[in-house]
Structure formats: structure tokens, C-alpha cells
Length: 327
Image (cartoon, rainbow, N blue to C red; front, side, top):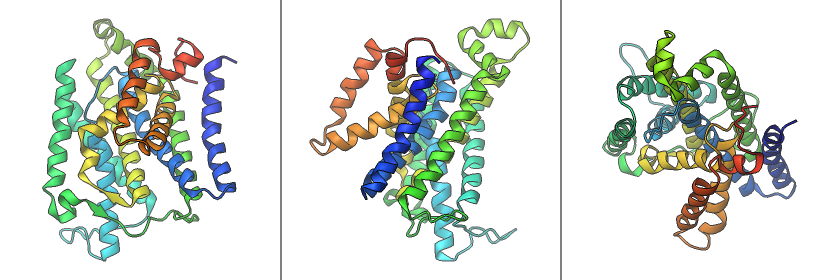
């Protein structure tokens, strides 16, 4: 076997091993940190689909992360207050069922990604970056000015949502949900990258003119990739809001978009487990250095600078070599 598949397996099993050790040592906070890694890595997988495979540098992925979070917050808040979401023309009530919330979050974020992508993908380069950033800021300020759901103060959910057959308040059971979903998302990314769609998307990233010459529309490829990316990121947003039992406009902020991009760059753009390694490093630095100084981002910036300058394939590429593989 090549080094990258072995490294991928080690990372995935290492995350599980850390949680099992924390359970044995009665360290629920460590399990919560690992859950954050899994959720943020899932958001990174979503961006990696657009950035790594499609070459789309988006600074607006916090839109989909926030939509997923607010989908959870709105549905759960109406369920806990026993007030219907909509009464006319049809009655729509809130819910505390995780599968239903996930479906709503993915549908809403996917539709938003489809609409934003349809407009943004008519541009390229720095114009695409700025348009996605502008959409992110629009949603951020809309959430701030939305008093029905907390406005600037955000929205608290008092009880975690439920999943059939599991106690989601138990940290290790909630981690298991996020861990399985992350595994499915990584499997989907791997399959897409090897499919005809993934190969065509990669070809469009490298030379759009040649792809058009064989009768394939790069715009449609990128739009589908952007929409799928939004769906995965929206699911991560719903899980993140459920973990914290709180949702706020900061989920829409450009800093959140930047952090998701940092996960991908740190671990390795287009690398299958790049977002997982990047999210783990980010959370580890936040936990270790955050207690020493509130300016711990300085050290994160130094690490990111070293990776960009000397490890162009990210941490995964530095350890496993330059060859990009998705298995």
C-alpha cells in the first residue's frame, strides 16, 4: 500500500481511538473536542469538493454552514416552544428529530448554493471570491437584523435534538453520529473524485477550453459541484449548532469561511483527509494555545505560513508525498 492510504486510515482510526481513550478515562470534554473536529472536518470536506476538485476559491461557504445551523435552530426552537412554524396555507410545526432537521438543512443550503453558484460562477478569479464573500456578508447582516430568532444575540436551544435509538446527550453517542456522517462524506468525496464527473471537473479546473471543445460545459460541472459542496457544509452547520445547542450570526461571518478554508489548506487541498487533519490541528492549537494567550491565532498564522511555503500539499502531502490520491 502507498503511504497516503495508510496515513488516512491512521488519522481516521486515531480520532476514534482518542475518543475511546477519553471515554475510558472519563474525559467528556476531550470527546466534545473530537466531536468538534469531526463536524468541522465535515465542513472542510464540503469546501474541498469545490476548492480541491473544482478549483473554486469560495469565501462564502459560511453561508451554507449558517443556513444549516439556523435550520436546526428554527425548527428546534418552534418545537420547544410548541408554536407552529407556519400556519397557513399548510401547518408546519417544529421538530427535534435529527434526521428531519438534517434533510431540511441540506435542502435549504443546497438550494442556496444553487442560487449563489448560478450567479457567482458567471465570474472567475478574484471576482468569484469577492461575490461569494459579498453573499456571506449579506446573510450575516440579515441574521443580525432578524429579531424573531435572536438577532445579534443568537438563539439558544435548551435540549439537544434526538436520534432514534440513541441518547444524543451522551457525548460519545453524539460523537458516533458525527463520526459516521464524516465517514460517509469522505466516502462520497472519494467516489466523486474517481467518477466521470470528478474527472471532468478536474479537467475543467486545469483547462476549461479543452473541456468545452469535447462538448462538456464547465459551468454546469462547477455549479453541480458547488451545490453538492453547499449541501455537505449545511449538514455540518446543523451538527455544529446541535453540538453547542446555540446558533448565532457568527456562523455566517467571513471569519468562519476563512477558518473552513484554513482546515483544507492546512491538511492539503484536494487530499481526501486534508480537512480532517486540518480541523484536528486547528482545534488542538486552539485548545493548547488558547489557554496561554488570547492571541493564539498568531501561532496558527505562523503554522499556515510554513505549510503554504514549504508543504504545498499540506500536512498530508508533507508526510505522504506529493502524489494526490483520494483513497
